[in-house]
Length: 113
Image (cartoon, rainbow, N blue to C red):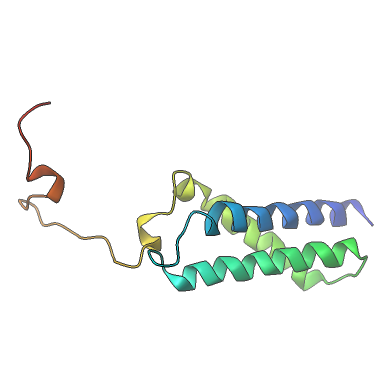
C-alpha cells in the first residue's frame, strides 16, 4: 500500500464519517429534502466502498477519485453546515419578503431593544 493509498483511505473514511455523522444526522426525513439525504447516503456508501477496497489492496482509481471529489465537496460546503442544515435543505423554500413587509418576527415587536 502506497502513501497515496493510505491518504486516500483516510480521506475516504473521514468523508464517510462526515456524510453520516455531520450531514445525515443533522437532518430529519420529515423536514428535509429526501433527495439531499439520499445523495449524502450514496456519497457515504461510495466513500465506504472506496476505503474498503483500498484496505483490501484493490486498485479502483475512479472510485478513489470519487471519494476525493466527495471530500472536496464536504470541505467546501462545511461552512454552510456548521450550525445545522442550511435553509436550502428544508422541504419548504424560504419565504421571501418584499421591502416594507413585516416579517413574522417583527409583527409582535413591543419596542424593547
